[in-house]
Length: 452
Image (cartoon, rainbow, N blue to C red; front, side, top):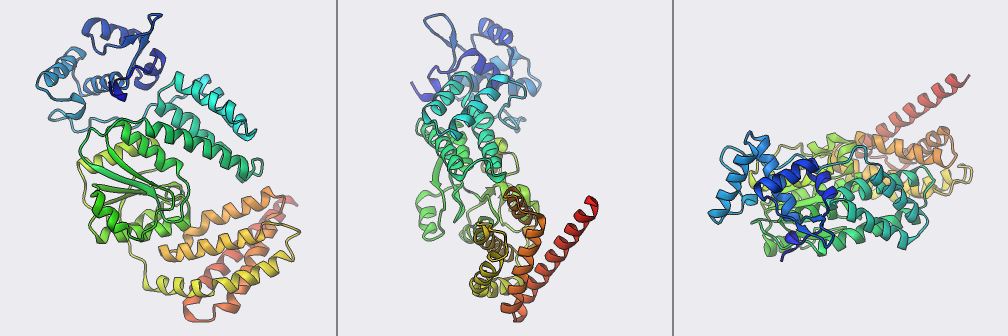
């Protein structure tokens, strides 16, 4: 018996995943013997993943206009021919897959379980956190637990860290437990049943593995052969990996602006060796204009839809999307700023740290801005940094520092840049910093006026 045929889901889990009413489900079983769930010793139905996939296939045929009796007849006809209906798209029905995994809009149980898991993680109670997850997986299909509990909980914990109410240690503890559970699910996933292979990983420097690991698991659940490379995948000798594995598609994620810049390197690299690239990540949702710079297929903003987008890219690959190359002006500015950034940072650390009212994160903020300037230059537009300046301001405010501190920090950085970027390639950066300082001071003045 394969993992897909193992009875593992109760009636409630199947109802949640398929959207079918319990009465409809029982009627189909009674009239058509499809699916045919096992029974517990107490007589309760217990469904396999194969049963759930069968129900989804029948629902898809209904959406295409077939009656349930015709859909069942089509299923049996394909089976009698020795064909797997789940691998067959009948002629004229190209859009077989759903647009996304099912979600729960108003189920108190999953909300309560999510809250309990967050509480356990922020209390470093590993045993309780694991018990909560075990309970969730016994109630719901894995996809629902992954999206509605784990993904949302990690987002809440991340917001808490940004707001200063959750520590880095608590956030790392929760992430480690979530990733460990995904790895456990991945190790129990079935063998590939579809032709085609993918490589999934994080862009160089990116250590946020939850999303690509979840995508890997979901694709394996759907029968794909996925090679997961993990965090911070270097370009070095990547061609030998491509030659060994021969993937149909390479999928990389980047969550931050600086790893979007390293993803650009990966995109050009795989493009040169004629391998298609698909990509996604938080930074592309926050700064949609970035997708114009990456030579590859953007997977969209919704993580739950990504596996279906990937499937369509493999099965019916569209023409490679156009992209905008980085200008020579920006390439020269990037090289020049990289050469001078160390001395600029040192001066900002010294001057800002002495006047920042004891704020201990000055070095981190300075290095963060430097990294973002380098990344935006490499990607071809300094305005990509905009949302990250808001992030810096929020971090300062959450440490009980006023918006005036942000203006002072940016002014200090601008003055250091004026002193150390004295050649033409640096003018692009100096002008951008001047504009940012001016905008910050104007906003601060308006805030003061509004309070009076």
